[in-house]
Length: 272
Image (cartoon, rainbow, N blue to C red):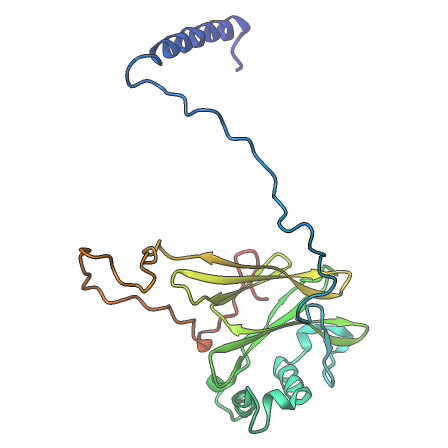
């Protein structure tokens, strides 16, 4: 039951009296003290306005590159019926300079693909568990898979969707991976940084104009406790008279092992 108008008025009068008493105490010792005027907010200041703006990027990062997967099909474009191992084999076949030959960066991946078939050691198969989620917004699931890039500690993260009866790769990222998360229609890749207590996070989101997953956010974030400030001497030595520490120096945390499966679905949706 809501209070009546007289009750509300009485409560209002009591509040006014309390406020007057409080304000009267502000002038006493230990009372509230003004912090001064609030600084005026200012917008960004453009530096070197006379310099002509760049008309093209310094490097071609292939932000919107896509690739048709040759030789892999599925009845009714049901991506759940696509064999993830066959998809990785198709990439290896399409890029022999990367996966085969004495100069190949990831020859170990191609060598281990035999373990993905019958009679192989599944624990040694470089292809990780596949995940499914509608990331393009067309009402159909897309495929997110990963595989280990051997030798080394990097993981290939790929995303595929069907377009005009053809399986198309719309995201390709190779990096040392701490974790991969699906949040809504976004793929988030977390990678270790060289700075202790920090990590990189890249966010990939579907772009309807480019028909590809674009890198929409790339940032470095603090994830650990506050570390000691760098030495003002620049060489890492403590100032004269400073006590020495017997604690051994901390080391950069190693990335999660690929065998532990860095691909993971966040609480907003898991594997299906």
